[in-house]
Length: 111
DNA sequence: AAAATGACCAGGA
DNA sequence: GTCCTGGCCATTT
Image (cartoon, rainbow, N blue to C red):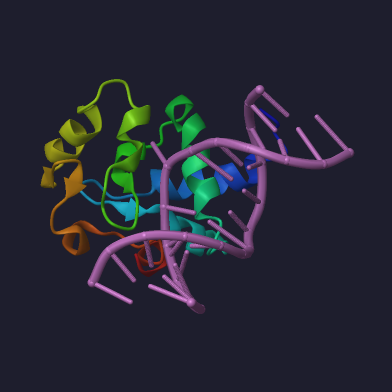
């Protein structure tokens, strides 16, 4: 890992870490908050190293609320279990009431 | 050094 | 309405 690039990753980790308990957000939302609307891919990629951090990657899903990255977790249903543990309804790797549980990084400023 | 890949998103056909 | 293409930025081969 090149520390210089952590500049971008660091932002992702920082934002992801600020995700409130029982809330979820999308890669695009984080990317947008960072200023890279189309850089969402990098956000997901950044999560690759998230497991080395205290970043709750299980609270980060794609725009559709689908647990696309659950494959990268320990088990198969671990990510889903964690989300359900937070009070989020997850069915078939898809978050229910996504808009209800959705959390926008911009709210971080409002808080 | 160049090309391909990736936990994505938005717009165009 | 669904399907496909482009772009984004860093990592990996």
